[in-house]
Amino acid sequence: MLFQALSAKLGNVTGRNLDHPHGSPLGSKGIGELGICGAGAAVMNAIHNTTGARIRDFPASPDKLLATLETLDG
Image (tube, rainbow, N blue to C red):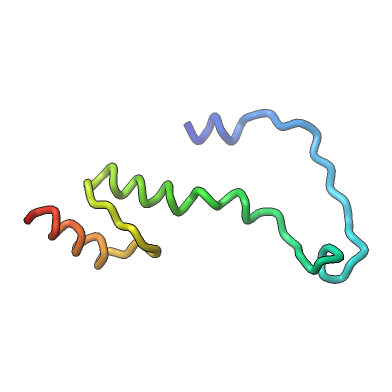
């Protein structure tokens, strides 16, 4: 499924340079952050789907996973 997502055709993408030293007049810069917003939730859901353990705080660590699995066992 990842191969299909990466090989999707995109429309025309146009880049342009900004004349402001800090990105925009407001001082903001960057656009790539939006693409990774769902990554953390996807990892947490993959852990839950695989193990049945729901970790509710970031970052997911082996210690948190083991503690959550112990509560599932009773």
